[in-house]
Length: 406
View 1 (cartoon, rainbow, N blue to C red):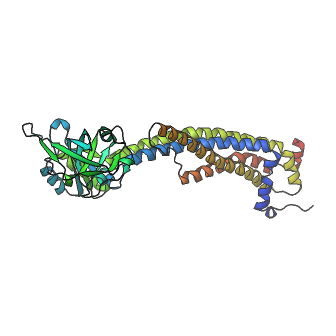
View 2 (view 1 turned 180 degrees about the vertical axis):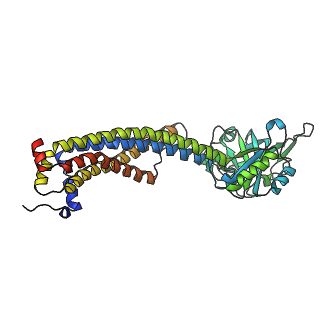
């Protein structure tokens, strides 16, 4: 019989020989793949949960791109100060200030049909929703000079209106009570120029009864403002503006700072979850290594026969490495599918529970595509590492040693 030369053992032949493990030792092979897939699935599940939390939190913080470069300015409550038109003009003079939006808040009354209730009325400009990152959960924010309002769930309840899309388009009338920061000044009731329609609804139950109206629809301009939203020229200008506004005594809140802190916290949580997953992965890798060693010990006689027929050391080494690589990749693919499937199933149950309790559905598990390929690559690497020693040991055996050990 002709001897097998190294160049004659093609990749396809090597693959066919390696897949014999699924026929010769099916139970052991599938159990090894299962153990690896459990470790991989734990990594995928926990890291996907970490990314889900991260995107969920950042998604709440970053509603619009402009809001990242926007600072919120207000005076401390204990100062008793309000933002005047003079303050607004001074803010506009500061370099690197690109755009501002004024918010005035006063108590008032809102009614629809025969129902009425008390609420906080916020008179805002058209760019407020874009700069502040506040967006309705249902419907949309009114555009510039558009006669529409955004109303909170609690305010709708005072009007006996449902907090769903059926309330969009309903007519509402409002009255604001202008109160000066001067205690001796007269309190003045101001109405809107016309009846307004509900354009958007905020469903957050923790929000007080709020109604956002365009300041252009108020019959008289507000005497002062509660808050200013200042957009910087770019993200690099945010720190410069924070320093300038601090010198003027403003309390400053920057969404960029919140996002930065939230990202750090969520990255730490993701790393901790990944460590737990990697621990499970190490256990499964040890199981794979044990399987490959046992497989080598059981096939010593087979290795001797192959060597006596002309198989080279590299043929034997590649055969064992290919088998461990196949087991590793198979465990990785199955683990990814199992981890993603477990996340989707748990997410479905949680969303089902949230829907019954009146909450909104959430995508709690997010698996980045790059992470899927990384995990499969790591599982393939683990397979090669687990099969390296048995492959080296098998390739170094001589036919005589193999037969004597048998």
